[in-house]
Length: 231
Image (cartoon, rainbow, N blue to C red; front, side, top):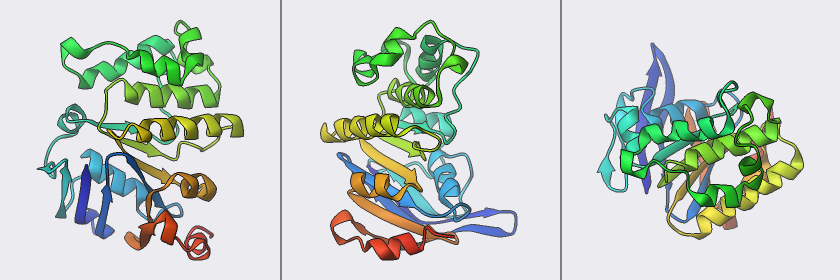
């Protein structure tokens, strides 16, 4: 579904990504791990088209999207759940969900019932303002908003940050359900090792703008991965 091939990204003279390559397959979770400041956010900006790359290529389902604008990538099926959730606090839950319509043709602008099956609490809170929800409920709303776009690739940036354990378990179950359908690729950026390890089909560990470890969950050497996550 997603192929990132040998990309290089700069901020001025700073070389933020150095030949990074990853893949995300439909029906599987790819986890990107690493400490703060190692290039994970820069990788996501490159995939989303928020920051131009200076070398390499990015393809979605075989189509080169390297120079495609962000809104066109969204229309092709890339959805993003940002770190910190970034819901609109003064809009209602329903209005927050409907902001996902921007990436859809007019005929497809409806709220999928599956969203409320995955997050039943949101159906009870449609008229409440987003800012009145708990942190965990806001995270559920952010994921649901991304799912409104019917994505083929869902990118989650540290979805466990500041979330209570019960909601983390619910988010894990939602990810497993979506992946089991076999239609969607999942790219998960995470620092919470156990959460990433339990979900990952494949993983990549970043350090100083490079992928320094990569493989499958079955071949993962936990001690080596943890070494790159500790300060």
